[in-house]
Length: 89
Image (cartoon, rainbow, N blue to C red; front, side):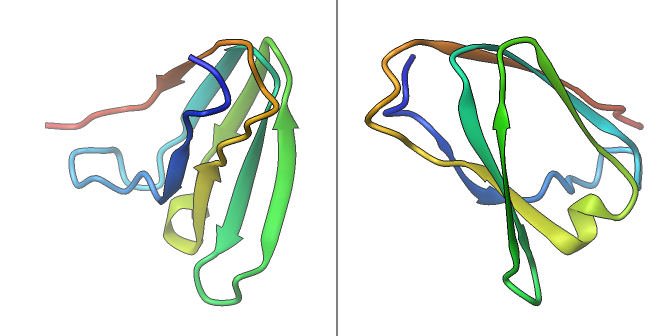
């Protein structure tokens, strides 16, 4: 609904997902910070997801990096995220 909601550190590595497949994420609404953190080095990479932006994570991203959407009390506008991934049976 607003910046009071976020998503903690995680990798999208569920067993039913296509190994090393692409994950596409479309961000609509409020601009939000998105952060990557390397699993071993703890190096962080921050970027801002503008309204209408497309973020694509593929290859070894999920194996080596965690990602999160931090909470921010300054953001009062809503945001919707659409995520596309390949599921295998």
